[in-house]
Image 1 (cartoon, rainbow, N blue to C red):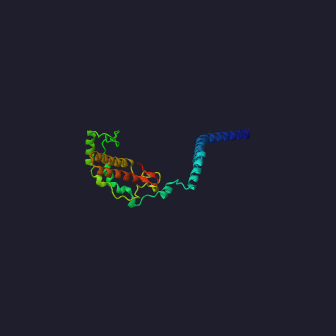
Image 2: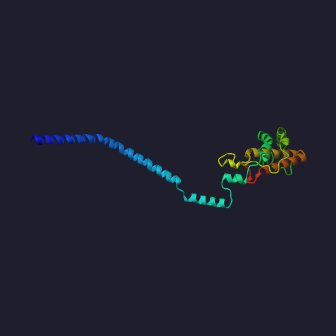
Image 3: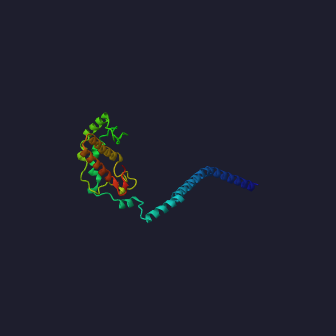
Length: 229
């Protein structure tokens, strides 16, 4: 009997020890399971993101195919291609410094809002400019009188504004040539002086300003197209 009792006690002790170890390890298993699945989820998401980034859609394939065809035909498709085909002018032919003084005058003085054609709808073909408008125009021309000497008279035939293709598409100067507002201000100023000179009967001065207007517009013309004017 003692042997049987001893065996039973040993069995009970073993069962209690097993239950104790199971109870101790259970929380750890419950903790490890969410961590495992969380890590697995992160890995799966990472793999899917990499796959999506490297996956080439049908549209992307068509774009690449079209670009390859354009490049094979000799068309420029990168800024390096454009820079090679349409290089910036040499320092001697750079129109920016040539017109720098004229830009400074034009951008610091605004043409009167009632100036015919330039800033208004009135076209003085068969009737004189309104007296009030003419007063404003004369005042503007007096303030900007220095434009007559600031405009260059000896402009190289190949002078253009640089397009800066070599700087890349993300550079704000690329493809601009000359600032739109500055170019428009200078064009308006030249036109206003031409109108004022014609209205006061100074045909020679009017003709000179008209020539200057055409000369400036030609400088805005580049082999790649018109500048941003």
